[in-house]
Length: 113
Image 1 (cartoon, rainbow, N blue to C red):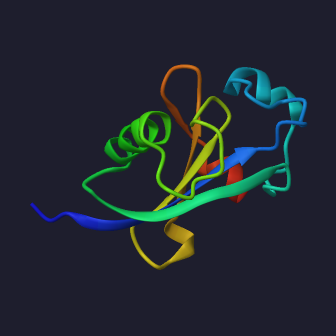
Image 2 (image 1 turned 135 degrees about the horizontal axis):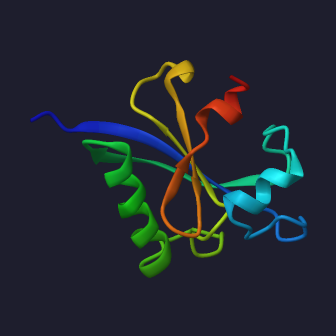
């Protein structure tokens, strides 16, 4: 089994936004253009992983229980977005929304597909 070194970025919505910390069902009503303007990239890194959902769960624990040195964001929470890319090709990046229960793949929304 080959483990990949996967690049990820964590984005958190600015607290002043009306939709901060809202779940996917409610945030859809805001018709966001997904330009990431209301979001701030708070961390980026590499992790060895087999799949996206394994990485998402590991990141959730890491950014709630044992924040890395230098991390300035809040604990990972609802409305945060994680970008995952297993290659250097940006077209292959996937985006996941931290929902009330689990993760929602929002790649199509972000890429306008």
